[in-house]
Image (cartoon, rainbow, N blue to C red; front, side, top):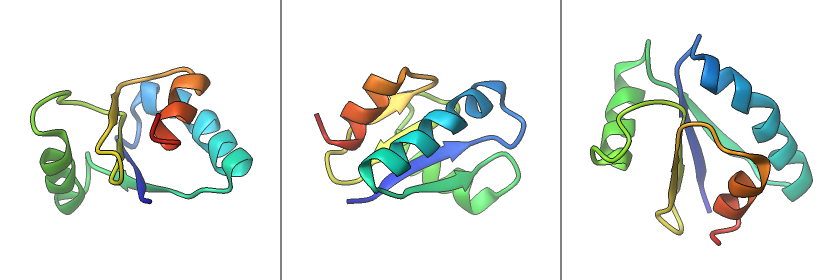
Length: 86
């Protein structure tokens, strides 16, 4: 399973999500791959491929196994359900 987070370096919503992502990684023993998109064209292209125009912004969370995503900020329970493919 690959959990991916696409973020912008100084994005306030991304910064808000950081401690929740860290908590998720510790609690579930998973790794969320992080891709900065504002300053990295390769990562931005990856985001575009995963997002398919659905969200159009960051933070964007993508679960490669379930193909589920989260657009923008979310609470911890929603993040956990996403990670567990629920």
